[in-house]
Length: 421
Image 1 (cartoon, rainbow, N blue to C red):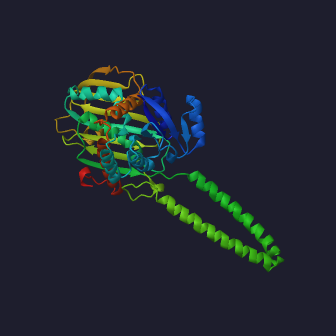
Image 2 (cartoon, rainbow, N blue to C red):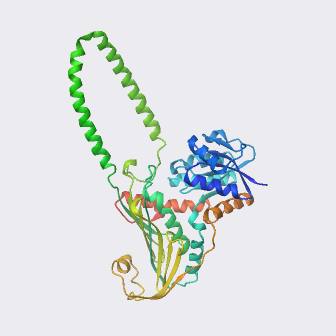
Image 3 (cartoon, rainbow, N blue to C red):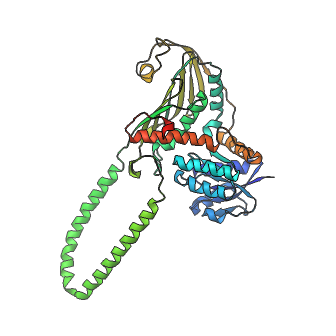
């Protein structure tokens, strides 16, 4: 029997989920929910959806659908907690896009709720289902790189810039998840430093010029207003009435803004929304001394999706932007002057002589990672068993790390222990 699914969110990632669930033999898309009617119409046309598939603008419209068993959430990160909690309380299994929540406490609450309801809470950490990550993990576990020295990753692009999370929360979770999986460890110390770039400078200058133009127009009209001033107290009274109405409208708008702010994401940082970090440098230190360095930016014209682990016998490179050669092993010895010399400064800033004897492009299974995500989720629903790599509990550990990094970012890069928050 097919599993009935409602997909919440018909944006870029929601469309991919819809496609995969439509194509999977064990699932049936019963509904698609998105507040944008144009997005719903586009999905209907793209997939030629049957008339029985409900297209709704509000989640409440499909909560009681017959045969509905699972909900896939592909909405802004700030909405994940509310939607996932509502679905779990209704007794549905949940697949949520990363991050599970923007608050560690809320992520833990969702895990507890899923356990109480005896439902699966599955988080879409797509990279953990990538064939390159699978193969890379085997390379490292077989000790083909020798003693691991350090790792580094670049995840950058030019927009989109999020308004509910910073570059850290938007991008870092992928690389942290891969490093943790490859090393089979979690960091014992983390630190982050970030930068906020000035935005819309041109827009501000344009508005300034427009303001001066309006000022001149205002002075010209002032003479006209003085000329018209003598038209009578009746007009003056009408103006005061309109002024009172304007103040009333201003009060309503202010109240609406305050209500809207109640639903803004709860980050472990004091930075206001307009000062979310655009550029972040992350350092992760693992129990065995291995360090990983991650460069994150969403205002970088050079799009990068690259992760590297350096060992004494070779280097493993996962470069998603090289579709023909996404996973490479460079084999060779590096003379680092001793096993203790494995720091970022010594290995990156002042590299030691390395002898690369062989460069091997590794063959990979040709399969879409998201298809594997959807397949594993459906299997978890059918058997009602958790997936170790993408369970809510596994996601909580990643959010714990991100929360600590946010705190470090707030403290100007102070090293912190994740489990102390």
